[in-house]
Image (cartoon, rainbow, N blue to C red; front, side, top):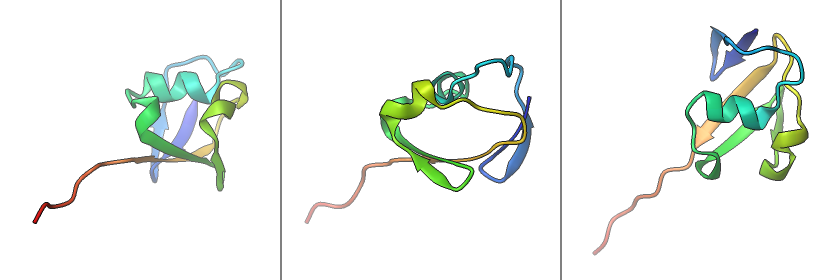
Amino acid sequence: MRLKINGEIKTIGLSNEELSLETLIKYLGYQPQLVVVELNGSIISPQDWINTKIKDDDCLEVVTIVGGGSYS
């Protein structure tokens, strides 16, 4: 399956039959609780990942939430 992920074309070695967004995020090595996912221009709520099916040529942006800051 060919996908555009964070601006890069990637070939994913998973079957495109009923591939859920949740499965893809885990396959890519992301921690689901620490990412925000945009699929084809729409942000997808984490509770909808299991029912969101990924298709060939979909475009994903995966943003990792990072804590930080400074203490004075």
